[in-house]
Image 1 (cartoon, one colour):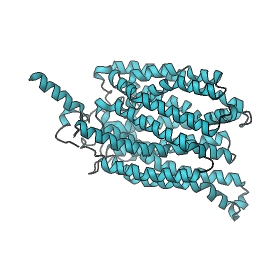
Image 2 (image 1 turned 135 degrees about the vertical axis):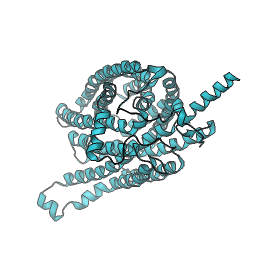
Image 3 (image 1 turned 120 degrees about the horizontal axis):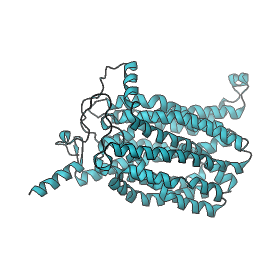
Image 4 (image 1 turned 60 degrees about the horizontal axis):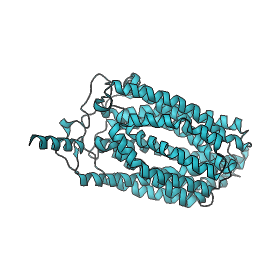
Length: 482
């Protein structure tokens, strides 16, 4: 009898998140709604970075302008907006929860401005020839690029009011014992979304951009709002911070708590360095299309099949991260990834080599994908999850703004503003240097994680003098089943 009771207690804790308690069936229902919302979200998120570089290049934008509009500008708005919405969300208490009110308000605006992007080139064309623009003597292509840039800004502002809160919702409602496996399913859905987009839509990016933008925006609006209505948040402990904190007081508390401990600084640094690699992704299409000679249709299909294979690997790797900790899996994946850019630099020359290199790098990239989001859920203090998540994003936004300008200027110099297409592959040397630094930082974070309890008893270092009950504490896990 004692063993049975202990087993039942363990089972209850595994299916508990704060005041939310699940059965196997209700947990599957939760997963379904969250993954459905993620599918709509990922489809929407795929469109802009996939199509915008091609449209901007077609309008005559330089590599630096492409980098600024697609990397620096989003990072700029992320820098200012993420801390505000995250801090307020952590301390919000409503009948709907602390996350869903933000999502319900921002989602319609994200869809609206995504649709506006499809009309931006036409709007820019109609503006050409007006009195003001004639007086300013702006070239037609400059006006169209500026119009597209303004539409991007509106989209990014709305998106960054929604984007961080969405991930916080997942951490608030999914039981810790299933976090890595759920995040793996999260990545599976993203991979399937990428497969569908790249296989069936990407090849038409330059000929049917408008219906692609509008269709993805409408699907996102309906699918994501449905998810918001169906997923329930539990009850939370009282807010960590006094809601009467003014702007200066809130900023002071925020900075003191988030940036005073070496453990969290290592976490931010590891993630921020990755921004220097991520900003180069917008130029990969020019290596594949302009130097290697692959068609957009072939690029879309190879990316789609890559996503599909990744989807098959994600869940077992997520279960591996649940068992051995996402910190260990992330460290192994980062080390294994280091030589991959050098292999691309030396051996990427045709469709065959592109396919082989994709197959070589795919399991490693999938290992990192399966461990990355669980790592983000594990390291910060849970009661301040949004606050520390935004502090990480603030650092990443700063480095992304810097990295995007540096990367754009670097690519303009080495390719002589895109005229030497063979030099676009220099981006792989850039990424190799970045990954070397990231591997060192990941190892230091791993050592720090061991110091604070490691796989069996990790406790995030305390900040702010006092702590509130953990959202997964057994003392507040009571009586509620969804």
